[in-house]
Structure formats: C-alpha cells, structure tokens
Length: 443
Image (tube, rainbow, N blue to C red; front, side):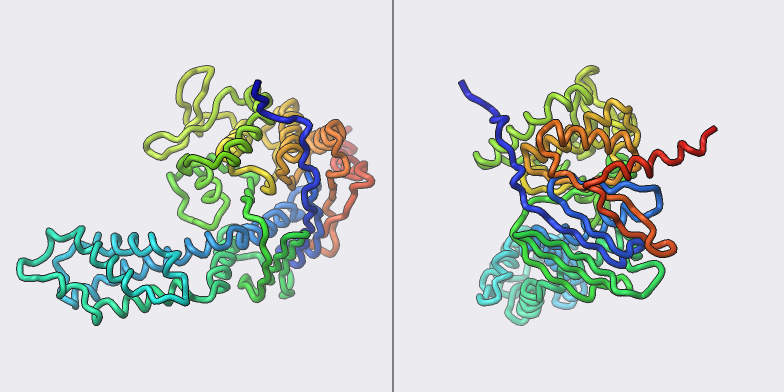
C-alpha cells in the first residue's frame, strides 16, 4: 500500500534567519529572528508593516536573481525593438507592419540566455533570428525586394550591438532597478526615514544567505548579496490581495505583491519533476483537512485568464468579489501550496492575518502556519494586534512540539514617532498586557 505522507517527518532543522531594519520609514531599529513562526505585535501605525515590507523588498530583489535579471533584460529588448519603427522605415521597410518589431523582440528573447554569454559572438544567431522573423511577414515584401537586401550587415550590426549591450550589462544595474521599483511600488517612494536623512539599511543573514540594501533618499546606494536559496517569498498585506488582483487581469506594477501573487496563482501548470510532484502532493495533504473544512472549494482560472472561486457545495463559479473576506488568505495559501510555490525554504510574510476571521478560524489559520513550518519548512512572520490570534499561535506551536521555533516581539516607541521592536519571546505576557490594556478604559 502506498503511503502518501510520513507525518513524523519534521523540517524544523530549517535555517535561522536574522532580519535587521534601520531607519526605514518609522522604524528606528528592528531585529527579528525568523526560525519558524515569528510574531510582531503592537498597536496600529507603529511600523509593523514596515518591517515586513522592507524584508520583502530585499528578499524578493535578490532571490531567483538570474531569472529576475533575465526578465528586466527582456523588457529592455522589447522596448528597444518596438521603438525602431523609424529605423526600419528609413531603411526602406515602411511596408512592414509594426507587429514585425514585436516578433523580432520575442524571437531574440527566446535566445536571451545565449546572448547573455559575453564571451561568445552570436551575430550569426542574430542574423538567423532576423531572417526567420522577416520570413513570417513575407507577404509584405515588395515584389522587387530580395532577401539579401533585407538583412545586410550594415542594417543588422547596430541592432546586434545593442542586444549584446543589454544582455551583458552589469548585473548590479538590473538588480538596483528591481529594488528601486519595489521601493516605488510598495513604499510609494518613501522607504527612507520620514523624520531624518539617515541612511536606511536592511540586512538579512543566515548560514546560507546574505543580503544588504542601503537606501538614501529612496535610491539604493549599496547592495550585497550571496544567494543559496531559490524558494519564493510572498507578502500578504492587510488589504486583500485577491480583491486587488480581481480588479485587473494582470496588475501593471510588475514589482509588487499583487503581481507576484497573481503570477504564482495564474502560472500555467507544467509537468513537475517526480521530486517536485511528490513534495507538492505531500504538502497539499498536510493542510487539506483544515482547508476543506473552511473553504469547500478552490481558486480556478477561467479561459479568459480571470481567477474565480469554484464553490464545491454549489458546484458553480463564484466571483472573487462575492467570496467571504475571511476566506481569501486561506484560498491564496491553498493555491500556492497546490501549485508548488509554497514549499521548503519559502517565506510567508502576513499583515494582520486575523482580519475578517471568526475567532474559530483564528485557530485554524494559526495551525496552518504551524503545520506548514513543521512539515514543509515554510517560515512565516506575522503582524498582529489580536491577542486571540497570537495566543492561538503560541498554543499550536507548543502542541506540535516546536515551541522553541516561535519568536515574539512588541513594538515600542524609541523616539517621538520612531519605533523599535522588543524581543519578548521569554515573556510573552507583555504582549497580552499591551493588547488588553484598552479594556481598562471601559466602565
């Protein structure tokens, strides 16, 4: 008999990560350990989300960096060719449709990995790509035009030189662009401290990874990176991502939580390797019972590309706008696991997961985070001002024998309108004293 999952397997030997945030927006200094599930508690407007945003920007700028650099260069190549209309027209190709330029860009990008090899001359390959592209539009050739008139060295060499320039440029310039786009989209260009001109600095370290990003006036002034992990990092903000995604088939801001989640949820299902398949099946089994009880359905992509909820109890499609708000983060997690995006060494950053949840679902959400770490190695940082949810996490960590993998922090004011975190892992009562304090004001 086949055994799907060895429930005794634990991934709690996962690598400890140290996150340090200095002079970012309202955060004067914050040092957070990510070793399982970490909690940052406090009132609103104290900078809890700032810590998650800063960590997300740095982690997502550098992880999977070769893939990200390739995307930036593909965008540059497409932009370059689509602006060459006058160049083509001046060379006598005015009869060709503008779609030819997009076709050339697509074909060049198919071979971008080859062009990124700075040691090799790929002019013959480029010549072939242009030739094949023009052949697709042969119906537009003037009757008196011959193939040797179309792709001469004089015509092609400037384009080839530009392609090589894009594909072999300094990688740091691409990474700096990616990081600054994340800063622009996530912090609205206000990552630097709102109160002073001090250098904003985010450092993330573990045994296998090292990242540093220094920012002055919202521009990256220094970067360091040493990457040994390719697992994805996802950030679920306090506003509901599914609602934001539902308003657009594909968010325009590529460097944003919306785009990252949308891309992961909408990715075409490709045949995984045996190892990937087995890991995903095991991961789905870990959280299946809880999610089936809460959700009774799953996210599906319609042929139009839109994402809908497939309600199994109704046997019908339901618009995301009509799905209960409390279910939406559950649905995102379910789909990311099913698609193999949340897996060992993935990191999940969540703002106020208790929002719109019934108290009973606080327990279920807490248990999902604990199970995903214990059996999958998915590490999480959550911000919360709910003592009920934080207590649920604390209890579930203890119940599953991984109490020592929980880290707890509270926000405290360091200077006027500037905040830091205090580690209260050894004295979590301080969290509940802080969050229950408003009850003292009730008669």
